Image 1 (cartoon, rainbow, N blue to C red):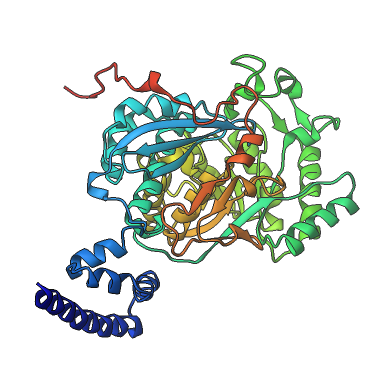
Image 2: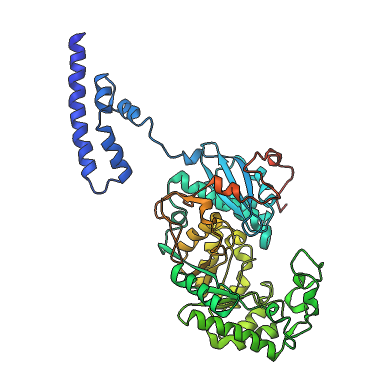
Amino acid sequence: MKSYLKQVIEDNKKREQQYAIERQAEIDNPKTLDNRRDFLKKTALGGISLSALMGLSLSDTLAETTSNVNRLSNPSDLKITDMRYCVTSVLGRTAIIRIDTNQGIYGLGEVRDGADPRYALMLKSRILGENPCNVERVFKIIKQFGGQGRQAGGVCGVEMALWDLCGKAYNVPAWQLLGGRYRDKVRLYADTPEGNNPKEQQERIQYRTEVQGYTWLKMDVSIRDIINIPGCLVNPEIMKQGSNAYQGGYMSYSNTKHPFTGIQITEKGLEELAKRVEAVRNMVGWEIPISTDHYGHIDMNNCIRLGKALEKYRLAWLEDMVPWQYWQQHKTITEALETPTLTGEDIYLLENFKDLIHNHAVDIVHPDLASSGGLLETKRIGDYAEEFGIAMAMHQAGTPVSFMANVHCAAATQNFLSLEHHSVDLPWWEDMVKTTWGGKMIEKGYANVPLTAPGLGIELNDEVVKQHLNKSDTSYFEPTTEWDEKRSWDRTWS
């Protein structure tokens, strides 16, 4: 018996010596990944030797010494087990969803600002038990339940969370799953600060560009700014019948599409609006692009008159001059002006961008990833537009969850121009999440693309998010079992 034990010890010593040589060679090999190299170094501290003396095989030894190593999930067996949510106060109310799995990893998504989280919750029964790594398959199951604008919020929020999950399961960033990246940093555009007087505005603009580092700005050129100046507008009376989408009824100004208000801008009104743009251009300088938005509900002819009045200021784009559905009117405006035109923040799916793209009705498409269909669909929109010589900017006005989803998509899309950051001046906004790669989310007007962090590259900072929940719903990822049962037959064809 003693001779047998002695022989086992001798054999294990030889095997250990040989393994030590092989291990050191792998450590020294420059192709060895850092996490693998770190593991090999740790096994040299004694775990192998102790188990070898106990007569364990090499495979048993490795199993023992790696028993506490955090392994990735098994993607092929991953299943969705739950969906929960919270409603933040970002942009009034913006919901974050969390999709859980049977392997302990989860994905974060966002229901677009102002949308009801029930747009996402109604999808829960349709995705339970699905493998979240089959992103396109799951998307095709639920995309029929999305619509234009914020009605797409649930589908897009789920799609974001799926990419976050898939990236975590395979330990790669979301941009890698979309085909790779074109850039390491994503250029942002921010609102142009206003002020109580020109001096104050100049100081705020300098802070935005010189300290915060933003190299692309956007300003409103609104008929609201001239409504109280006599002689600037024809038929301003309709604007007094409701100030937002929740007041005044269906035919109020805020709920009446642009061609149907009867508002016109006079020559004096055009001069006043041009003065406002000229003042900002002089403060910002000519090197920084200035985009414009929120002109008011004016018809196509007045859009053209306004566009021509602003042409000499070389604006980056004119945004959403008429509703996106009127692609023929967009085309007429685009052909009449030298300034680039843009629309798309409320369009759901590539198929609804095609008329705009095929007819070159706009110069730039402008999807909001939280409405357009999520990461993959938005990349498809950008790629399709590129084939027709059309660029893509991206609208974004949510929490850091949708922001980072946009960053991954922008990194993976070649014809990308700039991404909106709508919460630059919200001091706690960035603190809502922690980056999983340890770096800053935003630096000097650019978003950093996570080069190695899996999924979206963020985790929620629970304490900060809890401090900024919407007062109408202060629950925080509570159970949603009432949404577990599917109660309809969803197929759209017979």
